[in-house]
Image (cartoon, rainbow, N blue to C red; front, top):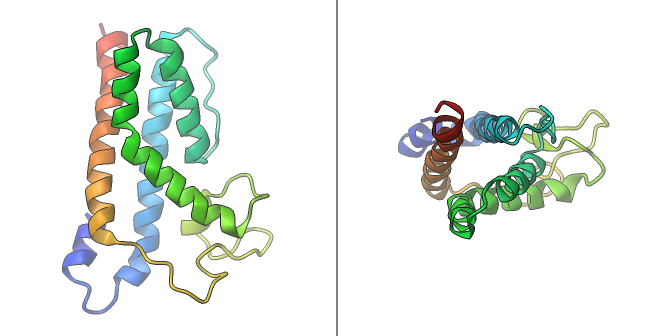
Length: 165
């Protein structure tokens, strides 16, 4: 909603300021969906109730992929899952490429949208360059709508098709 709002009314350049809350909320939402899917799969596979990855959505997504591949026995279901996360995978990889530029030693790199510097006073990727780091809001909005829809489908699938029955 915030992205759509600034896209429609950006005459005062508020997108440059509000992009950080947009990215923070987006990444946090993705993180929570992935953790919910992980938790459901842990229950279904009777595995240790643990969520790996802290706030690193790349790591959490990797964990979800691994668990889905173990849980789903049919090749068709695995392929369907991979199609549903294609856009998410692309977003996470693109985001991670930007984050890796600034600090490859830091374990939790998702705080770039909360603070301009790390705890060690290392600038994030958008400060460490003289070039603008741009976000195509139209593309962002359409991608995030699809990602949200697919994450919701997946989380509901594992919860209602298996756990709630």
